[in-house]
Image (tube, rainbow, N blue to C red; front, side):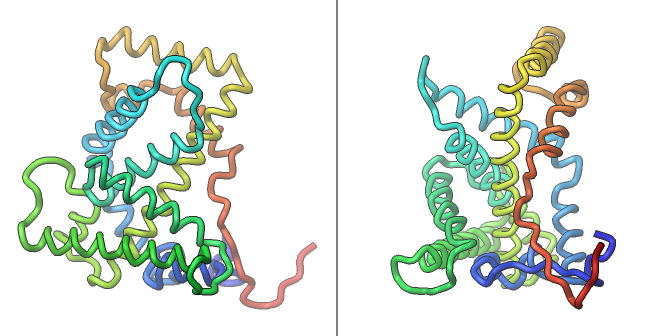
Length: 267
């Protein structure tokens, strides 16, 4: 990583570059990448996490778990994907209705399926379907921008990262959609894989599972509240260890591709 931008640079297949867009934080280089990273970090400020994110993620999880029936067999990967896309759509676009989330989930599924496809744009191909999904996602983002500028920010509820981008006017319109798509892709894929790997690793280690449950039960007993606060989150050291170890072992970010800028020798 010390030679990032010197000997090596990020490089992705054409299909992936086409889908995430030329203004995507994943694919841009140099100063533009640093600018977009700075904007993304600013959008996820700690105070935002304390209030909006903590409540939203718990509401999503409670709603998801309430739909399970006794002894129901579930496909964990599908559940994790639905939770992740629900959360990301809510946080990024400020969209929370089930119909809109389900529509975005289907579009995003088509989008992801084309990221490593052969870039031949013919009807029926994964690449063609993914590019059509990208067009529809961009159209929805532009519609939200238009409504926001016409009617102003909603007085209640989460305005989403998109709303804050519009208010702060830190990116030109043509770059906003690519920026949101990049965050949607990065956040959804990593969140889904983290949840999947955490569940898998915990089932392989019953002792860690019991310690995790004991920490959660103790916290609930002491606070007496169903909804966790930021202070509760900070009071779960073993839970944080589980998250850190999952990220260490799981290899969450699998698409870190690099291209050598010049011939190199290694031992």
